[in-house]
Image (cartoon, rainbow, N blue to C red; front, side, top):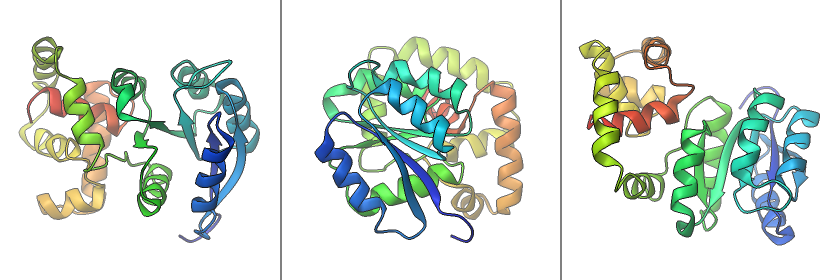
Length: 219
């Protein structure tokens, strides 16, 4: 990546977890860890003070937990993209985090290369939906709410054109603009234009929310 390194803040109440994540991230010359935090309140302050591009945010933290910190982060550091750190035991929390506009989530046993890919994707404005974890968890989270959510999602998607629905469908698979373009035989710039239009029509704040809507609508 040309230019300045990606500025990252790590928020986790376990020092060993933070140290491990830091070691992984600083192995990539295009990533710089500019701050750490042991609670949600400190995470908000660090993201704002260091102009973080990406915040890796644990859910279970003292003072202010990750879910409570999310809306504060959006107000205090709106340019920061948030990736939530979680375990399979926190499924309901993960769904709430995605609905609140985070850029994705990672499991704490994520492979180092996947962690770096997630940070790069978030910094580039993409959601990171891990084929090995995110799709599985999100689908399981939707169980029990499926009927009502599907009906609402289909009603919202009905406002889109056929081509916009095609683009939304590939967003639901977690594809980047470049991969979506190859799939749909469009230029990356054209896909980006469609994505912006879709987000506006569906009143979605980011690609993650649009991807969840695509899944709920059965695209």
